[in-house]
Length: 418
Image: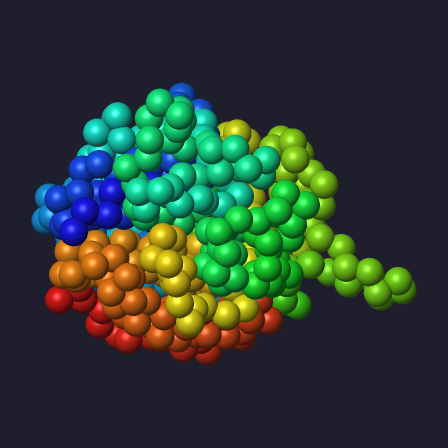
């Protein structure tokens, strides 16, 4: 069965889906539509996010790209051996060994590996930022259209008729494709597009600032351990850990505050876009805690090039499913578009890789695209709902400063594509 997909989004999930379709289904006529420029998309360094992969994510990588890809990722990343909790008033961190298989790798490095497995002609850049829906041609193929109703892909639909019969929505948390699936629509009116992308998504009241810096935590920190500090009165959480040889990943989560007099909610970094200002504001915020316990995070931030800092609001879906595809079998969701959830367990990347592998296997083993998408939804929805629930509970407890957090690594790692 040849689905000939258009994959909307060139992040980890979109590229992993492309590689999976290529390797598992022998589909080579796909296109990855990416809104960033060719130069930006080709850049492997400088993006501040990191990726934690558990046993499930590594198995998914192996299914997608073979043993070689999985081993390359393991070798370029850092094996995680446990977590260290820095407790206010205690001289030494509380070490919590973790026997579960986990690897931390820089986001840009993993994306670069996946991108390089795809022929250059299969990637189309500077396209897709204004996708508002799709239309079906007389031959049953699909064309992407923008908010003006014009075809945006194929790039020249008049002379190059579409041969694509499936759209894979890998367009992130604020996903146009998710709304099309949830509403079973083909098109979103231009005045509804902004609202549509946020429908079903809740802001959890936190902002996360993160980066990867070419610097190690230091000899006083236990190798292979991630370090966490939660402010005594809650509201601020600091994390740092190894991200490949000579690199450290740090992330700071800051909860919104409510003004006691006006009851108005104040968002940290509201309307701040200059990255130098982001860095200085973050350092000032941590300094205001007047605690040496977060000095490890301050040191990493001070060593960070402002241009590599990445900020994001913490968002998750109200509900996942019950379906991950439109009734006509023309749009299917992967990655955050399918299962936006809290990052408290670090499972978003692994679940994106799981979905890429499962979609490809479902297409390979089904007689038609509708049955393939039904099988894919049935396999994914229940597991994603459970992970979303557990992640949200853990995040809420952590931001309150609670120390006894549930360990569900065994349940998570049970997944396998077989």
